Amino acid sequence: MIAGVLVCVWDSQPLAAQVDDSPADTVAAEYLRGFQAAAWDGLAQRLHPAALEYLRLAIDIQVDADTTGWALANLGGAADRAEYDERSDDRVFADVMRWTQDNARGLLSSLVSREADLVGLVMEGEDTAHAVYRVRTIAYGAEPAVQVATLFRTPRGWKVREAPELRTLHTA
Image (tube, rainbow, N blue to C red):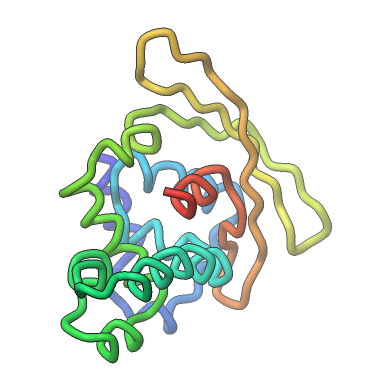
């Protein structure tokens, strides 16, 4: 059901053409649901360009270090480096997340096997918002935690710039 809602929100128009006037709290809630629903293309649309660039840097390092071509083909989803370099950061993010979901699900378990509820939003000026949310991991004995994601207003709408989940993905 959640995936269906996300598909309705994020249509198939080219990303550059989309401008989303959703309020910051809506974007934050959809960001959280994107992990729960494993809706990687939609989640990528909720990320700030600098966040996508930060995540792509981690993939670039692996692609550059691998002399066998495995990382390029599997993580980058490309036949050669030129094809990989032409891909947008949001495409690389979504492709890596799909590959991870299909081939290394354990790496994502802490991000997708949980419930996350938006508690509230704290505005910092007109162009920065901090979304406060409660996370309950679906595991025996797991304690709920409160986390914060920072959103910036961009010409294309509110985007998540910094969040614990993004730091986890970058280091994984």
